Amino acid sequence: MDLTIQKGYRNFSIAELARQAELNRMTFYKHYDNLDDVFQEFIDDMIGEIERQLAAKESADLADLFHVSSQLMY
Image 1 (cartoon, helix red, strand yellow):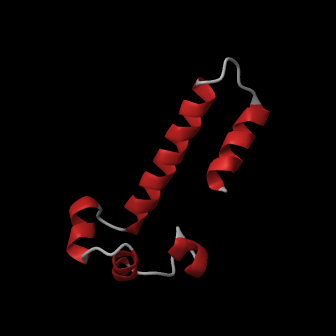
Image 2: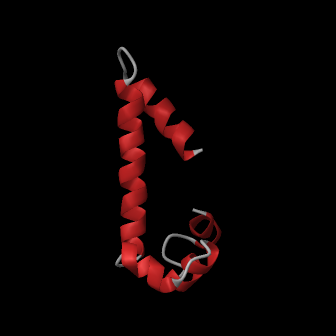
């Protein structure tokens, strides 16, 4: 996320990401094929967390969705 905030979604390399995460580039490739895979996993994780938090509420509405989403993004 730090690199995305600093440089933008498409403006850094896998080597930069690996360096920032303090891992070897080859380790990255054991888990992901490309940067899009990393972002997709992040999106999937966010959606899963939103679903979990909303499911924990007795009833949820659109305001709850926006609240949970904004809290996670913040």
